[in-house]
Length: 311
Image 1 (cartoon, rainbow, N blue to C red):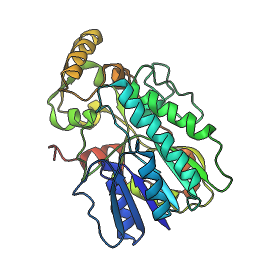
Image 2: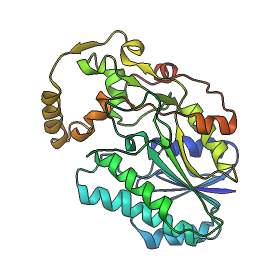
Image 3: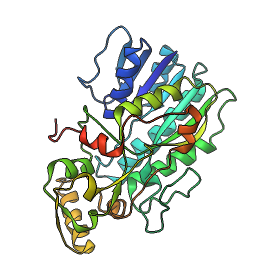
């Protein structure tokens, strides 16, 4: 087995690679930036490559002949340009899909989607399963994930290539070091908007994340769409009881977000505010029952394990 991971320098990529390398599994990382979180060694080889560079992707996959490809690479709101986001997220994902399909060694292709593809809506069910309609609204991150999912599921791949879509909730834990604004607000800020008080959140501990991904990668039959999330959630007022809340109209907060977003002071697109007003709680039963998996950590315990200061 050899696993190729795109977005290998990111939080999720680093978690998975360190777990695989610890089991002496050969891993190839692809990213447009380096990271100290995973260092090249006997079981890990790294290539500096952007997924928009299809020619280089072809060279890497044809040279390395991976059996599995896990696609994490995406912009995640860090590019404030719609066309460039689409080029990297959507066109780059199409490159991964096409090159993986033409690299005959690849048996499994996993795309990392997001709970954001479901969208935050007032009529969301308490637990959202995989059959629920995707409604990302105007939130570009969610829109791009929906587009990529449709592309992966409709693409005519060779018969022996299994396509898997994983809709992942927010992952956190002791090594969390990303710019996810929700976790920064919960762990670093004393005040929150009033509408957050009863908002339910769902957090997957990184240990459960790598355990589940490890099971998925060695599963020779799994394909299709699966939620990846814990079987628990919690209201913000319960897991951070010491927070104080300020009461402002949502319209005022959206305007403030628009200013902070355009000044590049906050990594939260204003169109994504609905996801912070209306909960998106994923039902993990489909994946959980497949492996008879018992989660080691609850949402509250995952948050408690998160560093309170950004690394």
